[in-house]
Image (cartoon, rainbow, N blue to C red):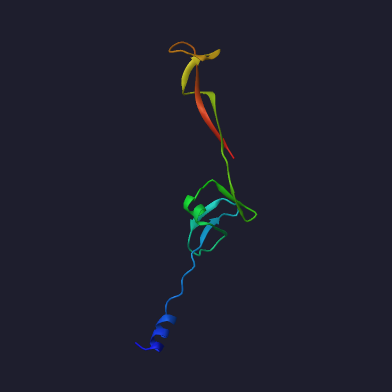
Length: 110
């Protein structure tokens, strides 16, 4: 192999493809998909750690990624199903007779 052949082989080595991580999002800022591809649509560049987490609990606000913290509250509500309780005292469980049915409802908000 000559020096010129070596230089030609060295120059023909494919260039390294840059690696990028993106979060594609809807117009309201909700995440659409995490991707390493160049796709059409709104996106922001993110780091590898954020890409690996791929959390759905984020929003894009003014071009920045914001993590949403969820507040969870449980309450009991009267209904047609659930635990039979005394009509005047929810802390007394009854098996027969007049009763109000109580069940748990989960409320989540950001």
